[in-house]
Length: 521
Ligand SMILES: [Zn+2]
Image (cartoon, rainbow, N blue to C red; front, side, top):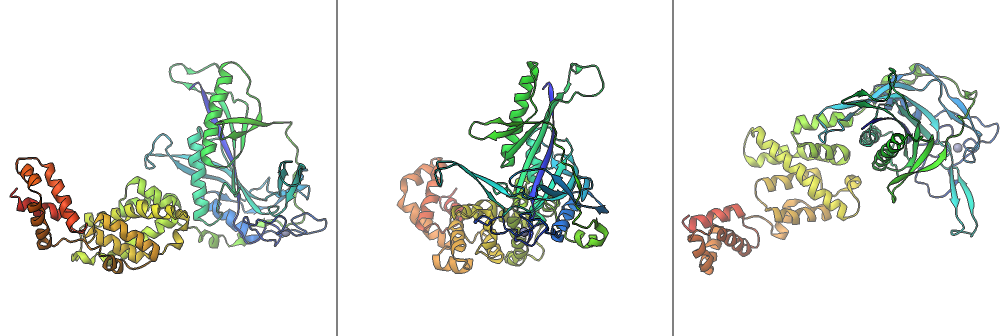
């Protein structure tokens, strides 16, 4: 490519707190009725006084700590003055000169590789600051409601604590944007800072991007002789409600802007949105003059000395982060990359897996070995991960709840461990296991009780299978003849007949061995 994309992100995140940023109105993003969670402070009545929400400040510092940021010793809020109908005060309380956190970083997996372990790339974080959200404008078209067009305002959102994170222009592709956004989203959820649901607007991404003349492998720098790269015009991508779409929008923009530049046409400085149906970006508004917001320190709020905020107490709230979990799961359980990723991205599923593993230690006494070999343990872990990731998740989706509902699952980790141990020790066939798991999922009953009730135990007993095999041999002279003449596939047919005769309960491996013995193979 002749041009190199230069991309920086501005990400807004609604914090999960009990109350709003500067008043005690409820912070409830799920409230369906408009203008319920409001008070004179958040709708900006004159003469009211804001009080900063300590929980929001601590959660912002917590994210800063997780991302290796420098935490400001001294900071304060400022007023950003502008008029908009969703901003009743005429200004937004934010942080401008002194953000709470600055100079951090987030490592993302190597975007050129599909394997997370193959190198990583560091994206630097410029700053993280705290501000308040605005109200929400709802535009009603004539076709809905009263037949007139109108703009309605819901102030439930006004004053919800909003964290803003700004990155350095360190990103270079749609894929990197997606990886950064998804990793940050995961960290926010692990730390309990936000649910970060983009569909609900709890996390919003703005992409700032431009193209500069890139390195050409054969000719060196193209089209210029100076030392500084020529930065192109900045285009902002906004109102995109998933990181997958953000990545598509970025890649589309790279193509669009490259095409313009190579035809010596100008890239217009503007804000663009993403048209999912048309798979293209579209102009939303062209940038006017840079606005002067006349920032000044908020006179109604005291300045913040972070040493008074029990920073060590906040640091103690740091939990294992997704990247740490990936490393630990790989090291401890030796699971394949894909399994580790599923158990990291779906935190509840990963937590459940670990509970199952610890229960397995007691269930696996079935193996009668004092100290089972490492390989044996690893096979049990792999089997557990397989059944969780494929079979259990399938059942959750069939019920229409998805992995988020893991916490309400009726199967206890102890029962799941017993289930795995029974499969491992071939006390139940793989088809029997499907039936068993579904029943456990629906009823929450013990596997042993269900095996008994549904007669699911697999027969590995030689003599019992021998009787069935003998009957099958006498009832099927033709396949037996074929097999003896060297047609090996006939054996599979005969194994099938034994399975049928035992109503699927015979261990197919044992059935095969018995047949081979009986047929003198
Ligand atoms: Zn309020």
